[in-house]
Image (cartoon, rainbow, N blue to C red):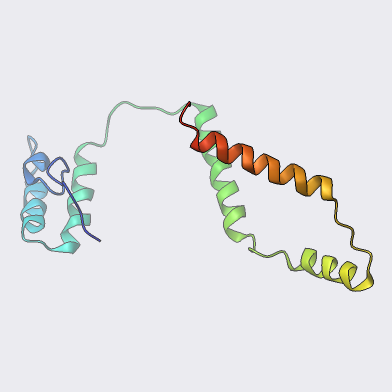
Length: 125
């Protein structure tokens, strides 16, 4: 992985790491200058420790949303890509000759996808 234009980054520019009483960050910056990949994490940790208090507080609503989003991501991450039960059900219907294709739903889906693609690539937007 190549990093481009790191001059504005505290990791790429050791001068940005230096603050009033930042002795540990200057040693981390020196290690970064030497190209030690393990020092990048240390330098970032020192930088975040220096700038730890911005006076920002999250509302209860924001905390709830973040918690709900984490739950949703966890559920999605733990959900299998293929629903074996649904696949088995459809296979059984096909083998029994009872599987019916709703051409209207297929056409609606195709038109919806084409419309969304058109909106995404339209130069008028």
